[in-house]
Amino acid sequence: MHPQSKTFLDKVLDLLAGEDENAPQNRYALICRHCKTHNGLAPPGERPESIGYLCGRCGGWNGPDPMEKTKQKEKAVGEEKVVREEKEEESGNGETGNDDTEKEKEKESGEKASE
Image 1 (cartoon, rainbow, N blue to C red):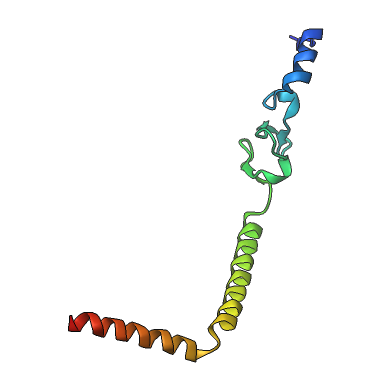
Image 2 (image 1 turned 30 degrees about the vertical axis):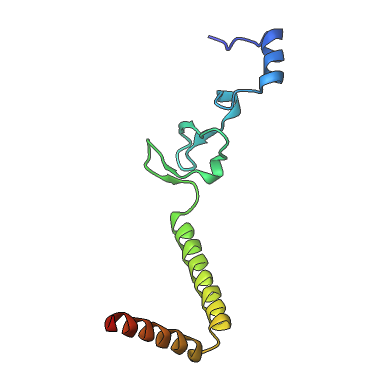
């Protein structure tokens, strides 16, 4: 069975409404890099290089290395922590700024206790 060719009206509607993203001709096949088996189609708008999946036939992992992704997240969190600490040092101006706020809190709690 051959796919039906588009009629003139189909082409006009595609121009007006846009093509169907979910149509098979607009998606990529997921082919296992180990055993070359077809494993379905990538979701609409996704490139096969960015999708991770296990092959149904050989069980091999296809896609980006999950450990590399974890390492990138850890690196980003570490960099975020350093930036946050630098901002705190700049805004805190050392220990004296923190002592003043603690003294104010003690005064407020003492006033509440006396009432």
